[in-house]
Length: 275
Ligand SMILES: NC(=O)c1ccc[n+]([C@@H]2O[C@H](COP(=O)([O-])OP(=O)(O)OC[C@H]3O[C@@H](n4cnc5c(N)ncnc54)[C@H](O)[C@@H]3O)[C@@H](O)[C@H]2O)c1
Figure 1 (spheres, rainbow, N blue to C red):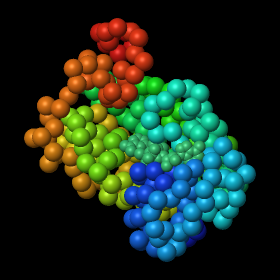
Figure 2 (cartoon, protein in one colour):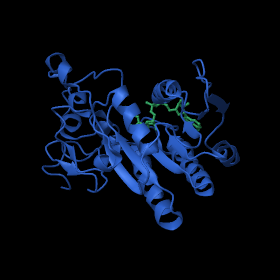
Figure 3 (cartoon, rainbow, N blue to C red):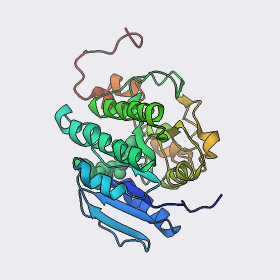
């Protein structure tokens, strides 16, 4: 198998933190990238890349951008917890435009899903990719909706998807929770590359975390079928980060961390999940 996709790849959210990382790395590998974002692209463009400014709300623009593409790496949209009304446009309607474009082009979607789809699972548990969604806010809910949309388009139209449930992808981990959830930039790039290049993926789910000793929360995903295994680790940061926790029992109890306590009105957390 070649290391270069047969067709151009559309990357949304190109001007964002992870979009810039992917553009730099995949562009340097010679990928033909069609970049888009609502914000201007701040870096020099790689040789075989073009950039078009567009809003995910503009379905016609997204259709045009996807023309001739074999994959859509969808990293654009609201990337943090926000009020429902701010999330609906980019993350629900925008996602629909992405899947309609994928359907028309018979393209695959690599979707930047999130650990916040399962944020209200207890950290004491270990969950499989097939376990129920437990979103910890409107943002996580929109990502769960995205995964479900991908499954609809697979069953009805044969559109393939890889749902990457990204943990914390930053230059380096910054608190104790990220000793579990950290995903290095290099591991992310390799995962996205495998997601695009693997011959058939159907609908695959991969937990986006590096090889972290503290990562006891997530198991049983589709990484083997993609030929991906993380190579980096947050373990080297353990000495400096182990004590870096909050004094909030909700934040420390659940996988989603600080997102769980945003607008949390229950008082204290229940004795057991579901209680
Ligand atoms: N960084 C992480 O640790 C992490 C964790 C879980 C999931 N994710 C997901 O990965 C993706 C990228 O994350 P990031 O950290 O680079 O976020 P980011 O906010 O830096 O990038 C998102 C990009 O989407 C663009 N965007 C927002 N609304 C848009 C619209 N209406 N039309 C077109 N573009 C729009 C923004 O301009 C921005 O450049 C997001 O989908 C995010 O939800 C990231």
